[in-house]
Length: 95
Picture 1 (cartoon, one colour):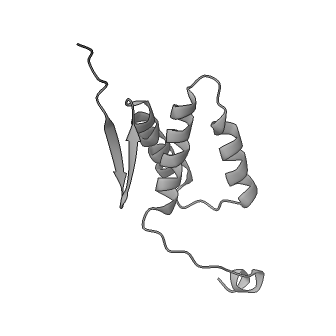
Picture 2 (picture 1 turned 180 degrees about the horizontal axis):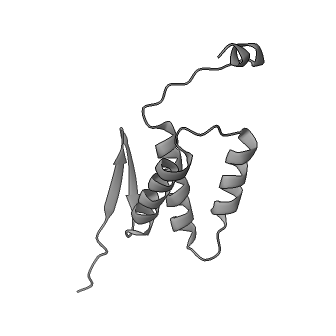
């Protein structure tokens, strides 16, 4: 008789992410906390976000699943309590 791997999942809002072990979940938590500690409330550019993704998607010291979890957690922090407002250059000067 073989033992089946225990299936785990992470529920984000109404989306369930099924994972085979805790690598994704742990990395998700790390990415979320990294966003909260270092980036929350800061001004980010599209280039900065691109470089964050590019730097972390193929981080060779971790497995691909960990990298995906880290990035997903970071974006979860970014989009938590989401309120999106598009600003033009003119409206930014008025702020």
